[in-house]
Amino acid sequence: MNYQRPDLIDRLASEYVLGTLRGPARRRFEALIRAYIPARRAVHWWEQRLAQLAIEVPPVTPPAHVWPRIAQRIAPQPARTAESRVTATRWWQTLAAGLAVIAIGLASVLTLRTPEIQVRTVQPAQTAIVADATAPLWLVNAYPETQQLYVRAMRAIAADPGRVFELWMLPTSGAAPVSLGLLPASGEVSLPLPPAAAQVLAASSTLAVSVEPLGGSTTGAPTGPVVFTAPLLQSRG
Amino acid sequence: LVADTVDPSMLAHLSADTQRLTECMRGLNEHQNRCIRLAFLDGLSHEEVAQTVSSPIGTVKSWIRRGLLALKTCLTS
Image (cartoon, rainbow over the protein chains, first blue to last red):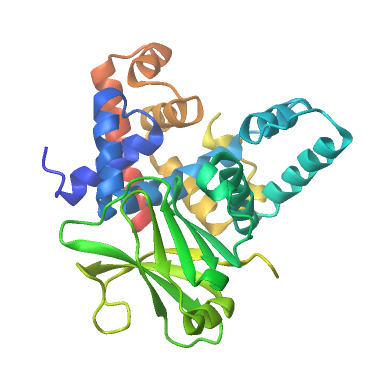
């Protein structure tokens, strides 16, 4: 099948979001979404539109036991103590508070689950999760003390052939974006975070990801399209 | 659930996006509209939609495909 045809991409994206694209065709299209930005954009477009249909569905309040069970599954507590009940309550509020705060929640879940991060007792100074419409793509944690920026690919994703994803910080002052380095297609990397860059990062509230030629932008500024942005949390602040 | 169950007085309170989609859904023919709702809101497959509306699966697929195409045209016009 020729996935270069925009009309075909759009038809597959619409049936993917509608839910009628199933079986091997759905799995093939999911692989395409990960690898091909136009497919991802088409899916996002249809998700934004068709989601509006759900507004007609009357809301249903879930039974009280549902949330504690979800909390237990995503962040198991050793025992049902008074403290763990407080934690569950806080999770609720965290979720309701929006994406930015969910990022902290996810980061803490990952910290619990991932042995190599567990030994790191220092909390990152900044945290961000870069996500597309459906799932987190990269977790970014900054450790200015050790001049390191840890980036973990949470879902394998590659740019188009001959292209890479580059990470930028956008200073709140409105100054030009500053590169933080190239994003890994999979696994975890430690990028250098010199003190000057750490200062800019501490004064930024947004990260952006652009598509660049192999090796990254040579001009010091993004040259390709910005495909993702993510709120940056000043997590010690 | 059909689009007409949305009280017109409520439309003013809905976002422009929702209002636009509701209008475009109304522009579809009855079969396209129903099949798209059954698939999206009830999570039915082509086969299940075909059983629910008692029509051949090929016809249902065509209704959905043309309905989505018409939606796209309406939403981007």
